[in-house]
Amino acid sequence: MLAFSEGRAAARLDGQWGFTDTTGRRIVPSQYEQVFAYRNGYTPGYAKTAAGLHRSGRPGVAPAYEAVQDFAYGLAPVAVIQKVLGAMRRTRWGFIDVRGEMVIPPQFTRALAFSEGLAAVRVEGCWGYIDREGYLMIPPRYEQAHAFQHGVALVVEKGRLLYIDRGGACAGRARPLESVSHISYVLPLLSSIYVVSIRKASMEISTLAVIGAGTMGQGIAHVAALHGRMVRLVDVSEDVLQRALQTIEHNLERQVKKERITATQKEEALSRIVPLTDLEAAVAEVQLVIEAVPENPDLKAQVFERLDRAAPPEAILASNTSSISITWLAARTQRSAQVIGMHFFNPVPVMQLVEIVRGLETSDATYETIYHLAEALDKTPVTVNDAPGFVSNRVLMPMINEAIYCVMEGVATPEDVDRVMKLGMNHPMGPLALADLIGLDVCLGIMEVLHRELGEDKYRPCPLLRKMVAAGRLGRKTGRGFYEYASN
Ligand code: 3HC
Image 1 (cartoon, rainbow, N blue to C red):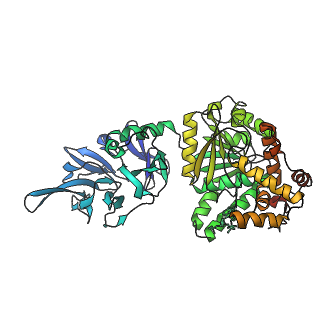
Image 2 (cartoon, rainbow, N blue to C red):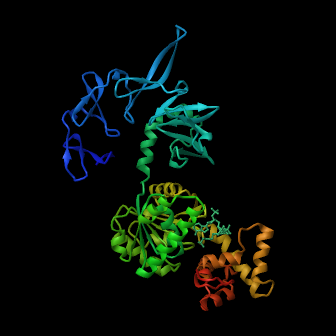
């Protein structure tokens, strides 16, 4: 199937365009031999010298189609040369409809390009669109657009050259031209070249597996499913998975109540998450696996070995580890170029950052794919090198550890330590409340990695942290950490 329209799948059948209907019956309308494209249920083809329409084998050759340059949404856009004041000529974009009538929507005079039924215009220095009724839209992030091609704007943001689609989302990153200063002049010449190169360099991820349905795994599955990805969520027991789905539903419902998403989006997101206990079966056909099992090096190593055996050879294996070396995890596999760190932050649906960690062997293609995916999930990726704790936890965890020392040494109560950091430093929550949110076992695990790998006393885990973990006071998830939490 190559396209889909009006309940039928358009396909090339034995070299011809045709349809497969909902019962799977193949229909190849007569006269489709000349068809060179297919759009929205119509097939523009050449009949005699004019481009015409054929549908269900009935030729509908629209008059005046000689001038047609493209075909979209059942209308043929044409550039119309008009005479103004008897002498001056100017070009206006218009349509020829299927009856052969010319339609020139208002304000199309200003159109500089044309894409998907919309006229692209520059208004007061910004790129925008005018639809057929003459309404102007300036998509988000288009203010900075330098150029425009094929329905996407080329925007320079923080020194990076990005393609931004009409929803304001990043549709790709234009790397080969980063060093070119006068983008707007070279773009028309090179656009087709680098659009192709972007597609080759990075893979579009539509299906992924998340291993581990704890706090982070739930959050990652939530965000990926909400952004249209098919997600297989894997954990060891049905119970854990059912609880995870309930939490995801609860968190999606929060977003519905806050009118961040619609009830339909919530239902669609939930329908994209498939819970599974069989890891091998879950990863057999995915393009990406994001591992989010507990922060234990032996466990992660074991999981990576299993994933390497079970996932398709071209699949990328990402780890949400908060401190373990990506290079070391990659060495447990036969595909170290396809292993990368994708470090999300709790609560995943809310936090903007994804720390992208390149291992020693991580390939550019793997990196590009994961970078684009993070952007497509509406996150902001920041790239760091593989070092214990990366940047986030190397800075955050010693602060939390020091706050725990303050409590242990009686410098202040947990409430006052947190109050100092909230009111004095403007942190959204104090370090001890944050430790409860992250999980004290996770904090301890990260401090142990920092201490072992960096070898300095300043990373020694606080004895009170060890004691609380030993007592099972792990924070919110067990109902008690530095604070007590009512079970919900
Ligand atoms: N799912 C969906 N939405 C959620 C959510 C969740 N799990 N948790 C909170 N929200 C939403 C709320 O609905 C609310 O939405 P709104 O802005 O549309 O009103 C918004 O987030 C804020 O929530 P609240 O009003 O309930 O509470 P706060 O304003 O106090 O914010 C907080 C809560 C977002 C957690 C904020 O306190 C915060 O940013 N804290 C710092 C968190 C942090 O530092 N995380 C990183 C931890 S480190 C880590 O994860 C790395 C690992 O390796 C250890």
